[in-house]
Amino acid sequence: MKVCFIGFGNMATAIAKGLTDQNDLDIHACSPSLTEGARVNNVTMHKDNHQGSKEADIIILAVKPPKILSVLQELSIHKDTLIISVAAAIPIDSISAALPPGTAVVRAMPNTPIAVGAGATPLVANANCKPRHIKAAERIFADNGIVEWVEESQLEAFAPLSGSGPAYVFLFLEALTAAGVELGLEENLCKRFAQQTLQGALRLCETSPESFATLRQQVTSPGGTTAAALAIFAKNNFKSMVTDALKEAHNRAIELREELGPVDN
Image (cartoon, rainbow, N blue to C red; front, side):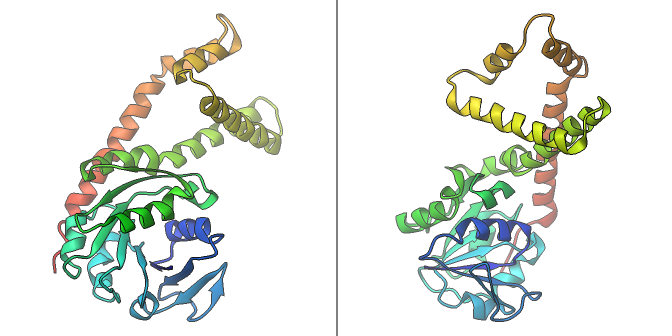
């Protein structure tokens, strides 16, 4: 099966990295900055979108949203081609309207951990998608993390949750490491222990039937060090801060959709 990426920035390379060990996939990428015919990490490079997308079974649109219209006009699409868009803010109906009638289209919102097989991707399909298209889309993303078919109206809510979520985790790891250094520990040692602590906490979540709140309470002895730290988080309204941050990101996702407007033929 031929898979062709149109645009090969950070997200496209992350998705491709998660696919390169699937030997039956013929993976291609198109971008003006690539070297024609070069093969890097089992991905064949092209400069020209039309040439690279010829006979592709799946075309993954990974260009910036304002470029979608011009890019769609450059593709080589046959009647069974599945178009997958990872471009933010462009509705699936707008993408469908700019393609040949009957084209199967899926919108996806993966996050960067897909590069290491740990992505989280909500998916939306148009009415032209047949079971084989659904299965193909799931294969691209489910083999490298979790997927969920959702209503398109929910995508803007997933943007701040899972789409931007890794950035919040990295920020928290930065803060843990910096705080450890403030307490007199060596930076690399803090980094190792912060990472392992996060991985261990996630493993507990995965293997325990308890809620997040119960797991937190199990770590927290009354009057102990954890309780003292959590009291500072509560005093500074940590939960409200997270909620406000996600609401702001959600509002921005809606603004971006409205700023871009419809993609017309």
